[in-house]
Length: 318
Image 1 (cartoon, rainbow, N blue to C red):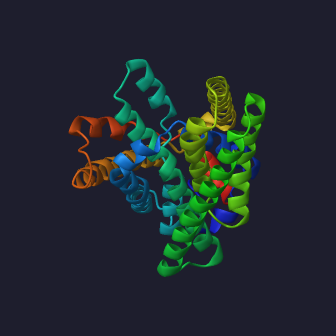
Image 2 (image 1 turned 60 degrees about the vertical axis):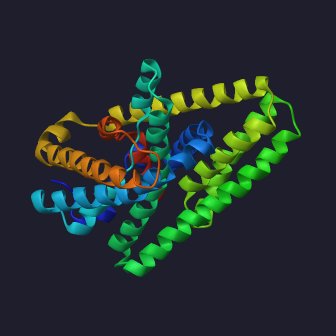
């Protein structure tokens, strides 16, 4: 049986849910992903990306929360909390397939950029819901205020530090030193934003975007750029491998089989939320930006996988 509201504080902490995991895994994964995305690609599809990253996460959270509340018997607040934990997409496997099939670059950017942006939304939403479950409630106005402050504040911190490091790398032509600077930036931005009670996810993504669009294009030699990208791609590969290994080690087949019914209900609810998000928000976004083909929307639905980041997000608010 899944935990009820009274059980929130007594849920055992698994290895991947320890706070140190989010501090080790999240910054590198987020920074590596944002490092490859160009501003012009994001601004071209900014409206549908923001719709999916913000409203899409809310839709997925509410749909899963309501389904689990009515069909599983979990209390509404904890059901919504569960929804926020698994509302962020993690399409790393999809993106690797895209590379093999030489899929249109715009579709790849849409899937990857949405994943980076909705990570921040999911974390902030989870923190608000967790505070409400443990601390006795958060008003709607207060929750919206916390959400905006965390997102905007985190973005400003990331942009500022990313610009500072971009200026430093412009004065240096040493691959090892510049890689060290970006490593310090990825982890330092994440930890500083968390210390300031802002979104560490958004801060790290913003810092990576600045480095990828300013430092990489104006202050790095080809040799340094090649070394930098190789380092972060390998770091991302290692971290993803470790996370999935830890997941495999902590999953108990007996527990999964015992809870097969609520698990299947939750999986179906996740797909339902994704379907509603993509097929309602993308057509609306098409009114304000370059049209996203209907065939691509089918791909985006199935590209909305959940993975390692969902586990790390729950640890970030502990």
